Image 1: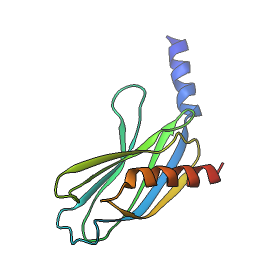
Image 2: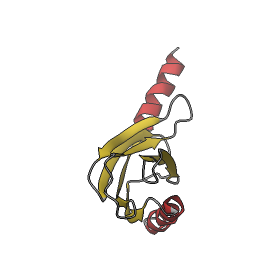
Image 3: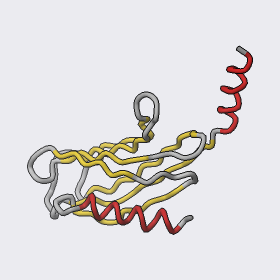
Image 4: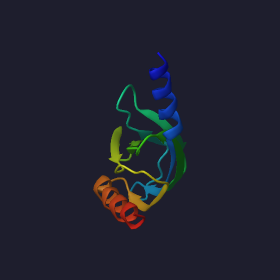
Length: 134
C-alpha cells in the first residue's frame, strides 16, 4: 500500500505544467456570418476522456480568437483544436492536431479563410512555429 502511495506521490511531483496559447483570425470568404464560430483547445489523454483546456464562441466577422490552456503531464502533452463553423452553408467540424509538446508554446495562425483548405495550411504553420522553438 505504501509503495502505491509513493508512486502516486512521485508522479504528482514530477508532473510539469505546459501552457499552450493559440490565436488567429478566421474569415468566411468575406461574408457576414451570423452564426458564432466555436473553437475548443483540447488535450489527448491516454486514459479516460480528453481534457478541455479552453473554449470560445466567437461572434463578429472576421472571427478573431485567442485561447490559452494549461495541462500537467509527466513528459509532454498532445493538444489539438476543434473548430466548428457554418461557413459553407452547412455545419462543419475540423480537428487540427498540434504535435506533442513538452514546453510552453504560442502559435499564431494568422488569417485563415474557412472556405479554403485551411486545416492543411494550419498544420504547416504548426510545424513551422513549434519547430522554431526547439
